[in-house]
Length: 247
Image 1: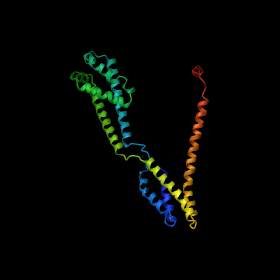
Image 2: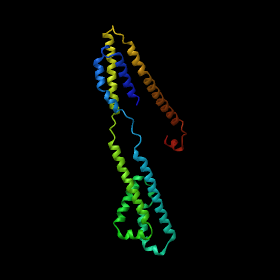
Image 3: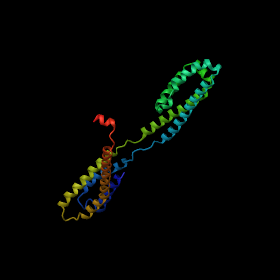
Image 4: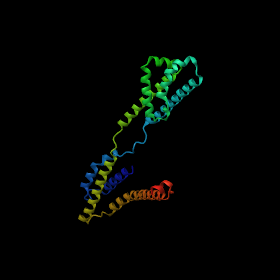
């Protein structure tokens, strides 16, 4: 995001000293045609507005899943004779669709829950058994939370698809080429027009670039230092028995 400042500064300096007076009108015009592209320089999108809502809904869904698992354990502990026939249908159903479901990632949970509702809605006997053992209220709450999650995922997808495409790298490449052309043009006209004093303009352009050059060198130094430190850390790791065997 520092790049627009460079572009803006170049235009300010050229307009201050006058492209015509310094025989740079041609290259200035070429640069000016690309000025509108600066608006395409954007930060990477770091956060989607629907993401936090989706996290909250998934926590609520997880709470309902925990409640269903607790209810299953309660039924097993109680071992109520009048529920025996219903449990013959209910327990295999719970084991298939809810067994270890909390260990799954959110997307896998969604798939299992969707398959569960498909199986439940397709069996009158199963629905009756679930109602008899008191699980219907939990399952309907799970359906509500799952529907809300599905809706939020659609909203997030629509939000992402509506975002303008990032063309930052291409814009920077175009402007870098244009500024390089400007620099080359200045070197030529300085020789062609010795009667014109180019030094004030050149000094100001160099002053504009200097902080960015320092910043880039500093970033490169930090990257190289971090890479060297990582190599040293890897080399200093203790040798294990496995390491000796492989050596």
